[in-house]
Length: 248
Image 1 (tube, rainbow, N blue to C red):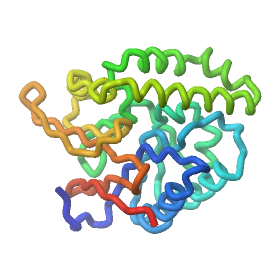
Image 2 (image 1 turned 180 degrees about the horizontal axis):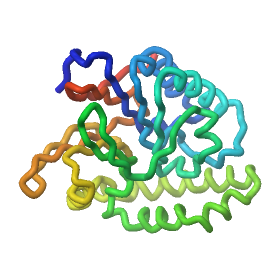
Image 3 (image 1 turned 60 degrees about the vertical axis):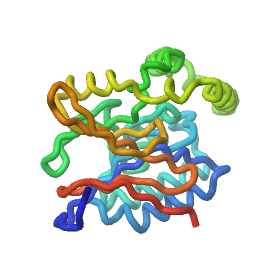
């Protein structure tokens, strides 16, 4: 779906790394990607869940500092754009600035090398997961975020630990169908944005889906997660390709 005749124009898309101190294999793969692959690109789009969880931009631990340092170094040669995910939606302007990243809206329509496309994390497409959508609506409100951010960092860490446990238990009880995107919502979004191509993460089901939408051929590209290997989408003027890299 791509070739190498791209005249030096390359963008990468990644999502769902879920970086955490207890997964040094993911971190090592990501740092390798930032050093070896990402500098070849003029743009890097991170479509959410860069971190397993985010407690607030005031978290100044060595781990998050090391990620910021690596991203900032890349930003001197490559533009970095970030859309928050369902795990790191509290990541704000302060940390983004430290990383040299530009924050984007939850849903963005962009023009990349002459191709218009819609990019997002992807959680808004999973409309059958009613319980999650209700939590998402609450957690994106200004009052909820202000309340959480006002708590001491150690309290937020306890809340995050409890939420991760509850989320894992809830996910185990949900069907795969509920946690996947709703086709009707995908088509509604593309029609609303007047676009034929969508790129997102969240579902951890890397694939390229083509379908008919009101007489037009639409395409939905799903990014892979980084639980077992590195995963990114290479996008050039000539096309795109999902790529993987095994952990060392």
